[in-house]
Amino acid sequence: MPKFSIPTCYFPSTILFVDDSREFLINFTLQLADNVSYRTYDSPFEALEALQELDHRANELMGRCVSEYHETTSSPLTNQTVNLDLSAIHSEVYNPNRFSEVSVVVVDYSMPGMHGIEFCEQIKNEQVQKILLTGQADEKLAVDAFNEGVIQRYIQKSHPNILQHVLDNIAMLQAHYFQNMSEIATQMLAVSAPVCLQDAAFADAFRAYRVKHHVVEFYLLESSGSFLMLTEQGEISFFIVKSEQDLQMYYDLANDVQAPKTVLEQLAKGDKIPIMADLSREALQNQRWEDCLLPAQRMEGRQTYYYAVTDCYPAYPIDPSQISSYRHYLTTMDYQPFAN
Image (cartoon, rainbow, N blue to C red):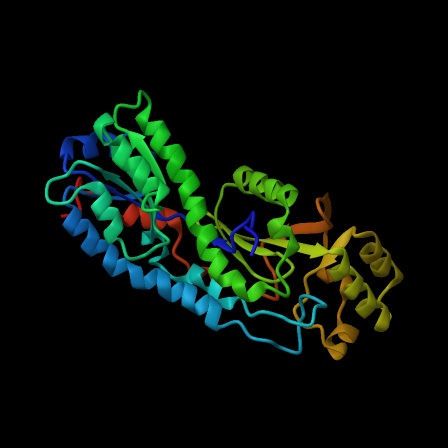
């Protein structure tokens, strides 16, 4: 299966710092931005115990994403013959504990009782990404551990800009964490995988939009590539994507129920895309089409895409009152210097 450019879901996750030097941990974490979720341990044994308690949460999410996929004969979202139930992915937005998910561990090599490589070998969740902090004398061991896949990065503690170097690698590895998680879910997307997820041009445009609008979490909604998005404060929006094939399907449906000529023209040109939830013939005949169309923007990649952003998508009713935002999570976190 090819690597997807955009994971099927992403949300802020927790970084675990493990080092027997409390002074190093305090100095390092004091320099972190206030929107970073982290935990610190000066005991590798207590850190492992905490990770083992979290393992089942990640496995349960991935298990749900796979087990809840099923074939259906009615699909309001695509004209493909197989439709996949992605509710297991976007329903994760209701999980108030999602931000405590540990995606990256930063661990020192030299620790009494258990060195950093041994610690990484003991982590049961293979999805967790690992950064090893080393001294010059430990570098060969770190290289061997990297080549064997025990760790994903190693950084010398004496690096002149260690904070930024570690943060840059954390950001990359957090993306890898969700990409790896997505690969398990997308095993069931073999027939109707959203082409845009693998399109580098679309991925760049999607990333630029998220940065501009401060989107910190997103969840795949449908096999056309639409996403539920949230800001740090929990503000909800929907990034709706349709392909030319999708618009042709909607045009055919609209033409079949004799929708207004202006509607047909807008669908034919890709000037607007529909957001109605019910595509039954009776609903379409009684539907005021003009009220269910959004101005669309065209984007060229490997294919032509049409996208629109709205704060309401009838096909996917979301209850904001049941969602705990990342900002709320951060304000309730008790950042003691050490978890023990």
